[in-house]
Image 1: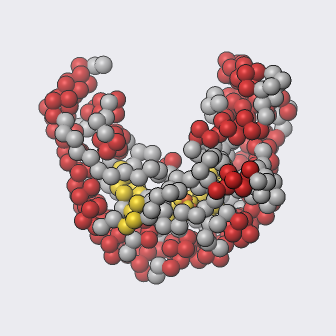
Image 2: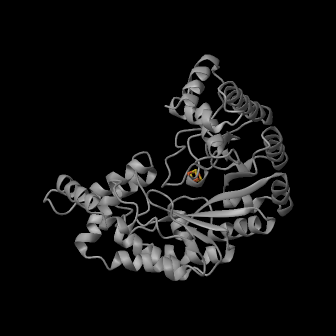
Image 3: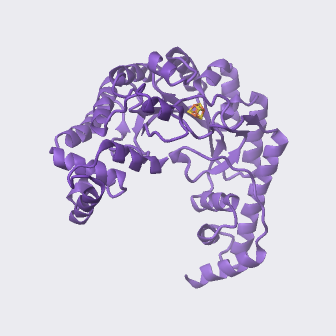
Length: 394
Ligand code: SF4
């Protein structure tokens, strides 16, 4: 530890007060460094079969006053870190102090503020699952207060449901954009109606299109999330082609994919047990992703940054990078059976990030050892074990 950091650490221990504010359980991967402000609790729908995050928890709106108090507490923590920075000779720059706090935060709120400041203090994410459901005038008040109180924030985003967006007037979405709502993250999941119905998503493809188009028209940046593998072995083709059809009509700014991962506590876990849903393998899901990309005819930036995705390197701007993305898929599909298996296991044990890692001899032999340990015959890890490894990622 350098002397400046040591000084920060000493002053921080002396000065620390137990400020805290409420935090929800999740945020999108792209909001990992955002300040998290919880404006609602849990999910107002809470019925999707593939989701466990808020199961058993009741949805609640929070009052504007309560949320404002949390924002003031976040500011108080920020001010405290600035003060420590001055006292430790860092001239009010908080990055050094934030780094120290991240090593031993007194609570989650400190950790979140420190991480946010460490990354520049520009982004905020409003939790939980559907913040758009707040009354528009109240959400506007919250966003304005947040930006006034913490003026370094230039980008504010939240999750929303297509159905909620479809119900809002265009003028309300415009009002939210003008207040400072920069981006909405929407769980499209699929554009295939029978699958949306089976999964109890509570929204139709037509509602996805209506909500998505309204968001685009309002000028709020739109990120649509798709679940790869959601169609299982039965509906994968329709899932891919109909999802592409819906996305083409919406033409969002971003399409983000994540891969279906099932664990106990999700209703889908029970559907698998009784044979109502048959999971696709990684190879089948890659074929589905290929079909999806082939059918996309829009201008979105396609992102695969979720840890559950087999090929995180599939990324690019549509339509110009389509061939490049399909080439990554073709590269995986042209591997020998043995190398495909090695890559699958390597991804699921966290050894590989991209296909090129197959050529790292150390990593490759570590994965070979893992295969020997995890398989019954020393050669092949079964799908159930691979699914089990994936559960750690959610
Ligand atoms: S709407 Fe989102 S958070 Fe709510 S149950 Fe469905 S997937 Fe989960």
